[in-house]
Amino acid sequence: MPTYEYECAACGHAFEELQSMQALKLTDCPRCHKKELHRLIGSGNGVIFKGTGFYETDYKKKDAPKTEAKPATPPPCAASCPHAGKCGA
Image 1 (cartoon, rainbow, N blue to C red):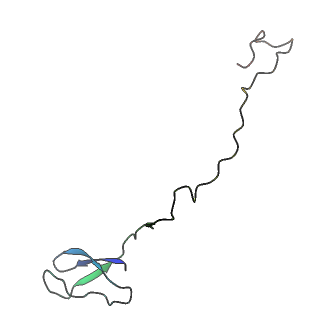
Image 2 (image 1 turned 90 degrees about the horizontal axis):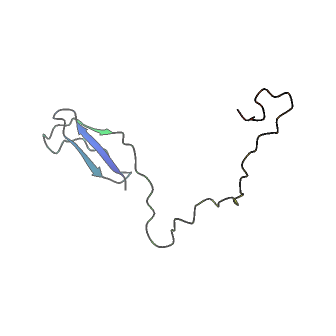
Image 3 (image 1 turned 90 degrees about the vertical axis):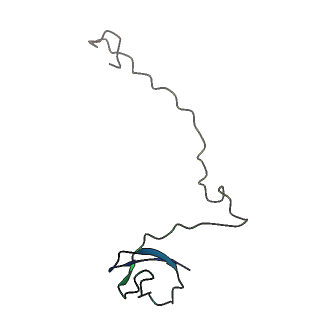
């Protein structure tokens, strides 16, 4: 059953109510008893898995095989290089 949020337009009282999806909207404010109650649009809740059989490794992506990265070496200098053999600058 979802939890709905309500707010009274007359007195400003706000509260949550656990209701069936088929249940009618509440209309009477529990504090001031006026028929000024409005159901608010909520953000919803995340899915919570409870019980045995759910493991955090069930839905993890498998890691790709690791390869060793070799450090990049600068190309050798040409004879006409203005850096006098200190390329990579």
